[in-house]
Image (cartoon, rainbow, N blue to C red; front, side, top):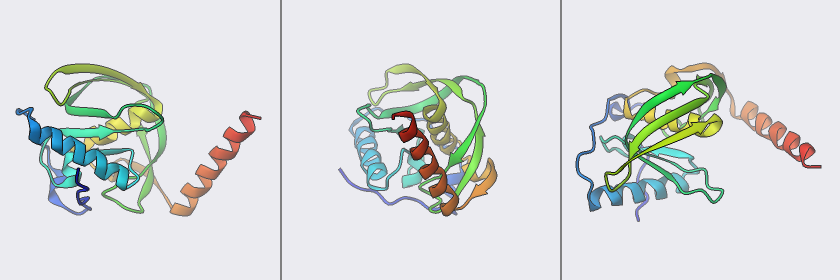
Amino acid sequence: MTILNIVKHPNEILEKKCLTVTKFDKKLAVLLDDMHETMIANDGVGIAAPQVGVDQRVAIVDFGEGQDPIEMVNPELALFEGADTDVEGCLSFPGTFGEVERPDHIKIKAQERDGSWYELEAEGYEARAILHEMDHLDGILFTSKISKYVTQEELDAMIAEAAAAEEEESV
């Protein structure tokens, strides 16, 4: 597997609608494996093909924690409901964070690396990450949805506060 270079903004591939995948072959499998490796090496939770310079409707989300990565080829949003605002960042915008409102519950339809279709429902953080990556495939950048920018210091404070609250709950 190869760690690929992350495309940083500004770059026109990040702002164009990607091409539908029609060939489900070894090349696609290698792309998915390399994207996953690249995402992990860069401490990401998700990555989309245009972020590694590839004009294809391919994305991955991986939360670790013993879960398998979610590979999405030609994903389509089948249902969305609710709303939630939380802080997002992006591998293509290092050091940029902001509050983004997204649906809280989604259902998608996508293809596996072998071309077979599947459906997946997600809520909360998982839904947010999937939608962020799907936006990349349509050339939509999270910065166009930010309602309030957040500094690294503010983000660090939010993470520390959430960790402290979680620790308090477990006592």
